[in-house]
Every structure is written in structure tokens, then in C-alpha cells.
Image (cartoon, rainbow, N blue to C red; front, side, top):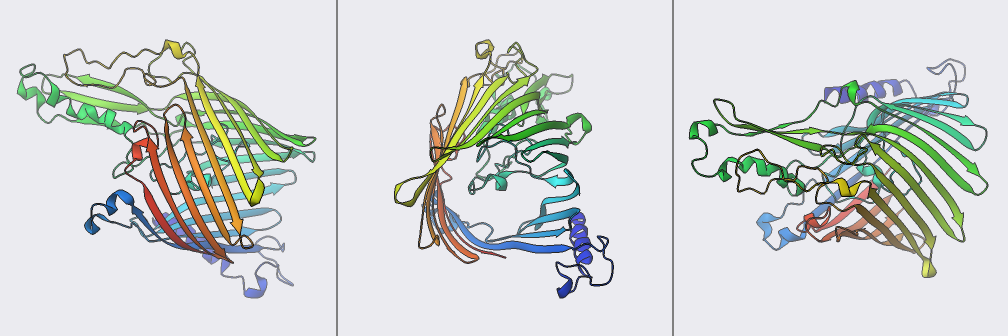
Length: 465
């Protein structure tokens, strides 16, 4: 926390010498920090008050209703010259960590070359949301009450990013990320994924042992250790390159990325030392290479976007139970204005696992008889060969765009589950009032169906400045 305070104070002290007439202009007769060049300083952000209630709690009575943290806010600071700019974006909430850094980076311009470094959210690929080529920043799924903007879900990563313009229509980019962070899920509360229950079955291992199988002294102080790797080491670095260009009416992209899959790989150990039994769940993250292409074009009134990628892991035979199989991924989407002022945005994402027939459904075993349904040995056992997701947003604006009706949905085809998100948004200048909700349904084994008890309604008042 003190590091965040130091960053903010240093930034404010840097702004202090600028009087109102200097704000955005160089001094008439003297030098400033940019060598006499104009300095443009911007401070913005938003403040928001909201009430979030879960429908399941309403039926239990007032003593079960908790509207959560009512206040939240953002503060965005930027300072810009013709040769460089710096950005600090902060999140503010009434929690144990009231201020957190959303992004903080500096960027320098050397003609056609741009170099930036810091905590950054980058978007690669052409897809509107959750495209297969957008691999640099992991996503935060610890609470699924605001999926309207994928940038809100992205976790900023420390990185160095460089890009160079080639002619008028082409660009070459490179990125280096020295550390790794996986997808983020809730560790407790109502948003804990159901998949964690599979791993927690090991904690009941002793209770399910046949009576008399082992002496009681071996079972003393039994617990399951959960071991996470230290992903802050250079061993977990990631890097990639991307080339984009425009040919006629179409935009094209080609990229390569070396990184780690953000979904964990659990392995299990069970030992019987002389004094007691011990068990552990060990997590790690597979390395992979990605090669991908993308395309975007306005065609016959449709704004079309498409991506295709191949994720190549080390399990080229498909038989290693601790490594995800290689996969092909694609995305296709479009948006179009329809009749009566309606706008439709649709995107389909799919992942196709290769060597799916090599996956075995053998159950995890510790060599002793257990009356317990343990997880499968192969991390992909029991899952479908394909995973298809359709995202659709239908919206209509009224009264000079001051009132918007929006209906968004996410459907998982193989898992047969969904999330529906209706919203009514009233905007007047810099103030907006939003009434929204979320309905989770379908099979309880699905990514969204598992949260069928988390249907919610939300009302928020936001002022942007």
C-alpha cells in the first residue's frame, strides 16, 4: 500500500509547479521538464454508487441481504509531451485495499518507434471480446457482475512493449512479459468455482478410508497441502510479436506468442511416512506456442472480424495426462445496424482439441482401496473435444442516445449453460444511471450454470469527469 501512495504523491508533486495558465502549455520564456516543449496534463476518472443484490438472498429474508460495497471510483492521471507520456490509473473502493493500481506505464516516441513499459493492458487480435489471439493479459473471474467491457476483466501485467510503423498502413510489435499470472478466481464466498470442489475431495480422504485399514497414529494431523509455483521468476517469462497491415478495404494481422496456458494443471501426491499420512495438490502451468492470424473488413453493411490460432503444447502425442493437448481456436463475429434502430453484435468462439481420442478416463489412485470419487488422472478427461461459445448483444438507443436498452447473452453450446444480462441505461451529459441484472442457467457443470444461485440485480449511479 505504501508503494501506491508513493507513486501517487510523486505524480502530484510533479504536477504541482504547473499553474492554471501553464496547464497544457509550455512556459512563455523558460524551460520545463520536457525541454521547453508543451506539456499536457490530464486528470479524469469516475465515481460510482451502486446497490447489488442477489435474488436468492431476497427469498431468505432481510437478515440475509447484503448489498456489498456501495462506493467505487477511478482516478486517471496522464502527462504528455510530443516525445513521451506517462499514465497512472487507479481503482478506489471501500475494501481492505482501498486503492489499487489498474495501469501505470510510461511511453516514449522515437520517430516511427514507440517503446513503453510498466503495468499495462494490451489488446491483440480483432475480436470484440475474449478472442483467441488476445493472450497477453489474464482475466479476473472472481466476480461475474460486470462483463460489459472485457478491459474491466483484464489483469494488468508488467511488460515492455515496442512497436514500429512501417509505411502508412503497417506496424510491427513486440512484447516481453517477465512474469506470469493465471486466471483469477474467488478463493471463498459465492463465486468460488465448482471445480474447486473436485480438488477439495482430497481433504476428505481420511474420512473415506475403510475402517481399520491404517493405524490411527498415522492419521494424526492429516491435511492436504496446496502448492502454488512462484511465477514471479524469469522462468515464467512470456514474449510475442505481431504484424498488422491494411490491404485495400481489409485489415490483416499475423502473430506469434510464447507463454503459459492460464488454466492450472493439478498433480497429486500421497505419501505414508513412518509417522503420519500426507497429501498434496501441486499446481503448475503448461508452456505453449501460439501462431495466429486475424482479419477485419466492412462488407455489405456488416463489420466483420475473424481470428484463427493454433496452440501448440509439449504434448504432441496427446498422451501426457499432465499437459493440455494442442488445440485449434477460431473466432468469427460481426456487428450491424438492423431495422428500427436496433444494433446487433454477435461473436462465436470455438476451441477444438487435437488428439482427443488419446485421452484416457482413468481415475486417480493412491494404491489403496478408497470409497471416494477422486478426480481423473488426465486433466482433460471427461471434457468435450470442442468448446463453443456464442456472445450476442442487441441494443437500441432512444431520445438522442440518452436512453439505451441492451440485452447481452453468453451461451456455451457443449456445456448447455448461459448467462443473460439485460440493462437499461439513462445518460445525461456525464451522469448515467444503469439498471441491470444477471441470470445464470443451464447445466450446473458449466462455467455459468454453476452459479445458478447467483442471479442478481444491480442499480448504479455514475459521474464521469
